[in-house]
Length: 146
Image 1: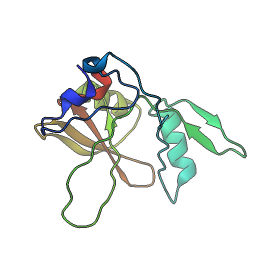
Image 2: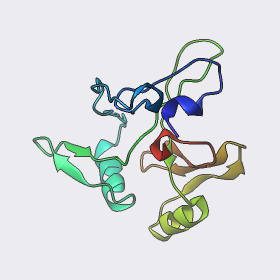
Image 3: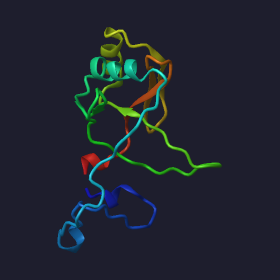
């Protein structure tokens, strides 16, 4: 399945770098090579420790102890908004029950218990600075599976 098959809007969407098998399978040069996500926190050092220890994210020191964490493959969705544009960041997992049990075992607080949203099972964990970080087990098709 190609990325364009994931949208049922009547519009063709072909992602750069994803072969369009209807047109000979040619692969266009990717313009975007990754996503750099920033989490702002008044307690950045503790949140960095949390990402390394609780979530097991590998990192590199970009200089002066400034850690940049590697993330698993990502998706980007655009939803309609009532009002101003805004952005949200969600962690994804394959089994939210097992993931939350493992995180609880590491002392991570679950800020919101699992709810079924139709498109996925949604919960939130608490960062050391008190902020909630949503996490979900998707049920929707993913371009990562295409």
